[in-house]
Length: 87
Image (cartoon, rainbow, N blue to C red; front, side, top):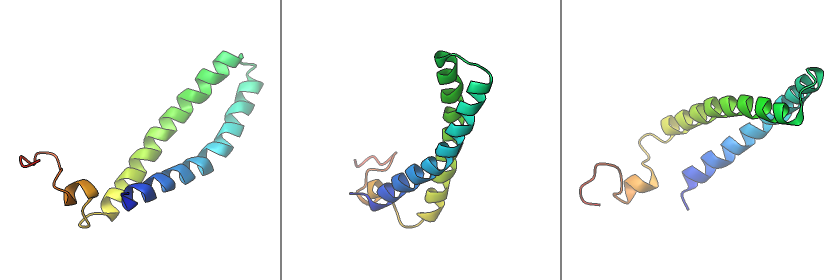
């Protein structure tokens, strides 16, 4: 098991939970106030959660990429990095 990948996945999931729980509450409140239908609420919430997830995942990925610089990833250690003609 790649410990760095597992740590990154766990961190991303925990950060997502901390962000998404209160954000869902606010989004649903907005949808109720706007008297949106179930379908409109679903599209509204999904669109916003999607955009937030893109930024969250990007910044967490960059953080772990910088943190793991010089340590090598499992694919680099096993000689499977992109562009390696020996793999």
